[in-house]
Image (cartoon, rainbow, N blue to C red):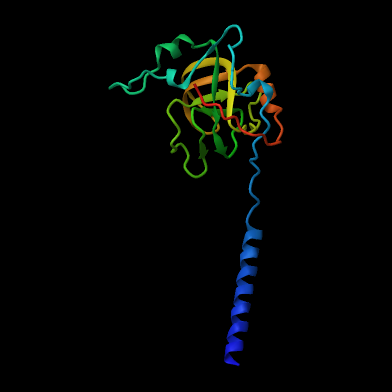
Length: 199
């Protein structure tokens, strides 16, 4: 009989624990949906990118700073400086940010994720990160695009602070208006990320 009581008590405890656990899960706030959006055709990276449009120059992440790095630290390369205020095309990964960025997003040579709530401005993003300013989207949330994307716009070289996050970027690209419009119109239908690597 004592064995039976112990079995019943154990079953009740387990059931109670499950109920408490379920209640705790139910009490948690719903996770914010951050499902990747469908990549607009103007930002898709194909196996053969082809030549950029007339008046546009390809800029690669490894061309942003002088290499090897000298005793002065990171310095802008001659290539970067020559392209200042000109239209460029870059291929990279949109950094997954929490909370979602508004008006501007970060382009990285590697897939990366940061949370400004947990460790603001203390992250392991590569120094060659580029801030992408989405024309006409001052306070609008930017859809998260999966895999590699290509962006085209006017390059700006020089330190600039993002008012919303306080993050300082050394390089920015102001997206061409049609590209910005396509990005803002991206829906939430997930798509398979591109497997093409950065060049």
